[in-house]
Length: 233
Image 1: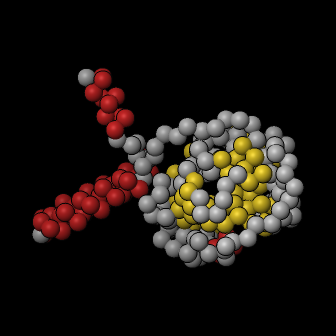
Image 2: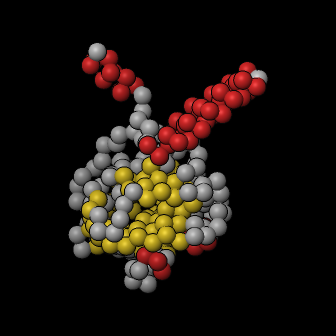
Image 3: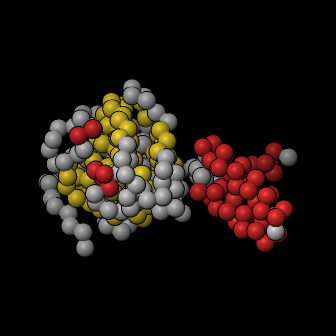
């Protein structure tokens, strides 16, 4: 019996507890739709499966070498540029390298810490729900900003709500210590993560690359590369 349960755990991807209420709502809607008209019940069943898929929380194998910055989100690297970090991060008002990872509605939306360190700042900012792929979404959209102090460096991580996303969920508080790849929050239904690292960090991803939360290495803080400019296109 134990072997059977272990096999089932390996086959089925875990679902994050934040998704349980939405799955129950989808199941209830499916039952009601099936009672009204059976073809509608099939539509509800497909929707329920998708909700389960959206809130999946698969295990990840995280690189542990000191200095590596891993992706906090599943998605596509849609921007690599230099920018002054948002004021709410309370970082020095000097340019840093910003790497943006865009999550569509089919990506896993559980966010993971990009480095090992202590959270020194968390600030939620209400705002709009523009398309998260737009550059101005960094300043105009609803967002939740974190500063993580690692070794002698502080990096910024900003969860940005998108056109469909209406809820940013945080699992952590100021003072918490995070390990690289540890879960710190999620965003419901499409969004973006901005990661701010020092200019001398070596960027190890390219535009359009698919990133995997907790696994894909975005940058190396110990490489001491000279500052450079990044262009889209």
